[in-house]
Image 1 (cartoon, helix red, strand yellow):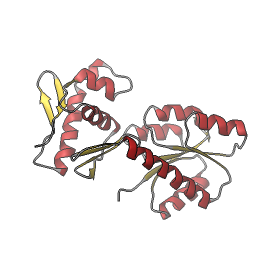
Image 2 (tube, rainbow, N blue to C red):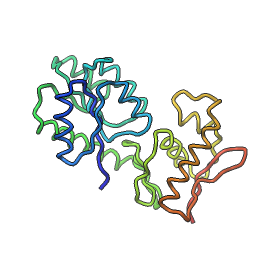
Image 3 (cartoon, rainbow, N blue to C red):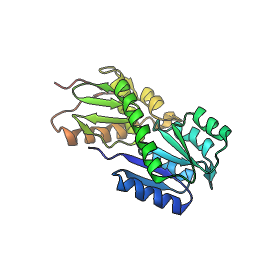
Image 4 (cartoon, helix red, strand yellow):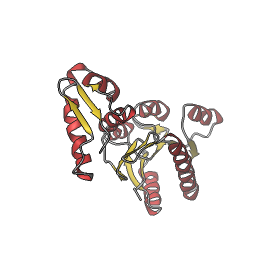
Length: 228
């Protein structure tokens, strides 16, 4: 079973360490960030299964950070906060957070809430995942399996492969792939598409060396072709 990774964004070390120890004892993989900036930087490389987000961070408000997180991942978010006013709970949930836990909280309750949110996400993923014999696309967790093996993709690699999977055999130009794969596309970055495609091909080759589903259309772009 693939390890479920949880990002913990919490600037109080004692709370972060306790939460991290508890979740890891339950079999989850965790990564701790004491600042919102650290979390955002990590999300540029990979998306977790779930994010525990403290509202009162030293480098910014958790509600504001949530919007920036959503531009990078659709992973579920549970707020951790000492603010228990009803208006704060309502604002957090209306922004799209999946749950809201008020400090101090029971560690058993935290684990139960985490598991409940992950179950809801799994249900949604089952409904929205694109599946065929070769690729399995989980749009909720932003994961892609290739021949039943989870691909270790960066954010940009995921977006590129997701785009190619959206219309098999369609040729996408570098410009189109750039628009879909980057939040702030700049035409000067178009050549970087080639390096990301090369990396994608390498990861696919590691799983199935005799296949090459990504087709190069010289001078135009790329497409995803069915494997024979």
